[in-house]
Length: 99
Image (tube, rainbow, N blue to C red; front, side, top):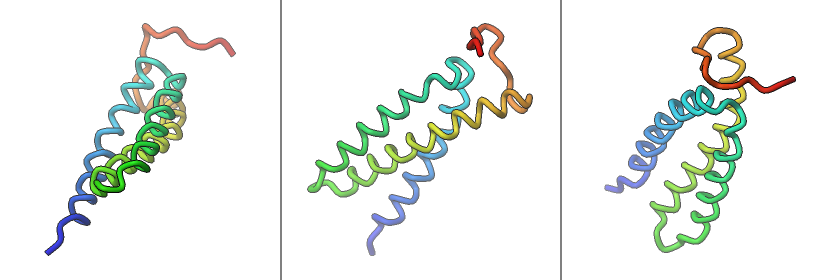
């Protein structure tokens, strides 16, 4: 029996579960301006995944992390909208950007 596919699915599930609170906390403390951090993480993980041909499981995990980081860029913007609607708390200590 080969468990690599099941393990990849479990890792994807856990990584997505980890990124959800990262997006919420990131928006709370930094606002949507944190998106470049997710971009850099995504690019770094995807680039590293390309060079791990002899370690396919680690390459897969880095690819999952990389694309989860890319998706988080979209989610951080959506989170800002959810905060504006009152669905999530706004950080009263963070300065708001001038329009």
